[in-house]
Image (tube, rainbow, N blue to C red):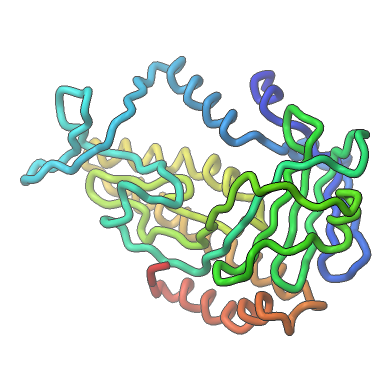
Length: 298
């Protein structure tokens, strides 16, 4: 926990301007787990790698290649013998599993990230999510600094980043945003199933969710146990743990789609705008397709 504190900062209140222009305030004081944490993901990943090394894991930076033939396995430069099972933890790139696992794609969103300063130097240990006609905005304290992380999420076919909506702009003292720190694409979907002989997908390679939920890391951690049991089962020729893992991923995906549908519908003031109407029109169909097992690629 001490290590985690070095790469995170607590968020004591969640604020939202979603269904109405007024701001809803939700304190974390009654949360039995304590306040949520805003995490520096790159720093957290390094901590996880360090913890794995301390547990006896050998870190090898190389590309795994499948072995042709009946015995299968994977060749990893630096290792003498083929590896029988590979775990794909390459995120939404799905570098290992993209060509081997079917994917049910639901949506693609573009998000732009800025690192900037708030309106004043006083601590702002709260997050803000705000709906806008062309998408939604999120801002929260940046771990280890006095800066804010500001994110805009919109359609991949949308225009260039827009001006922040009123509440976000007020938080920034109505200053112009600096040059974006990053622009990425968020994919909403899941592998179905997230495994095949000699391969198990984990994290975003197995289940990638809408940034609105802030649950990608939580899903990865919750499903890590079943994923490791799946990999161990495949090592010993037992596919039952892998099937259990597939059901857990599918359950998490369907719950995410239902929650996503609820929150999109709640932004009633912008339902006629293209970003929101597009998702409202297709949300029922996508959820029904996912429940029936239909799979498509995005």
